[in-house]
Image 1 (cartoon, rainbow, N blue to C red):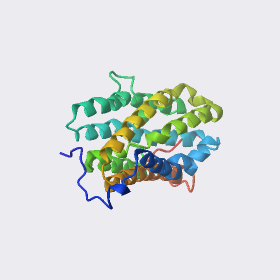
Image 2 (cartoon, helix red, strand yellow):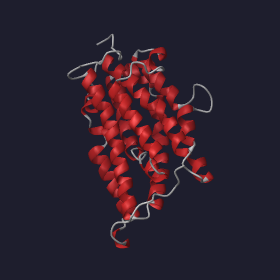
Image 3 (cartoon, helix red, strand yellow):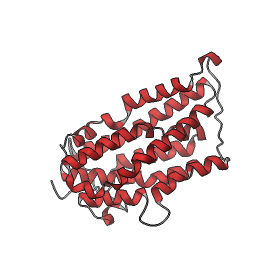
Length: 256
């Protein structure tokens, strides 16, 4: 079982260690340059350029990612021998699974998909998910499963940037895709959940990355997570926007 520590050789000497503020700045720089808020698919979405069918395809494919988040967090929890850490982190599972049927973020994402015009029976099995999306999400699970706890926690730090994107997305969806308005409860919840989760994770990696080498591993883990999010949108954009090559067996919108 992985533990809280990362076995590595420090580079340089103690004077090379980034301060907490410097580490945070490096992480924010990764977000500014690599987070998927810059992806052409999101830019099209926010400009109101996507058809209803393309919104449906995005909602359905993104559900595969949403449904795997509590699995990812369960894998991460199993790495820690610290009860205090486990108590703090398990709220993420409750946020997505809920403490009873119908209340968690996964269910709320299904409601968003329903608002777009597809049924939960189409969404839940994930049978129409693009191979590229499936591979990217599974790569995230593998990153968390196979990495030490410090790196697994660091991979969640895209939440540092998600609140701004969520806020923008809600405004643009109400403006350009008003039919989605009844399904925006997921995003409302994440406006408060994501900053809380990000603050905890940032404090954790800032405290436990005690060598410069570990700090660089933390930064690299965030870069990997950004690449995974970008790859998901690449697959969706390729299949449903340009050139529009939908793989056999994947979801085909029946509306423009």
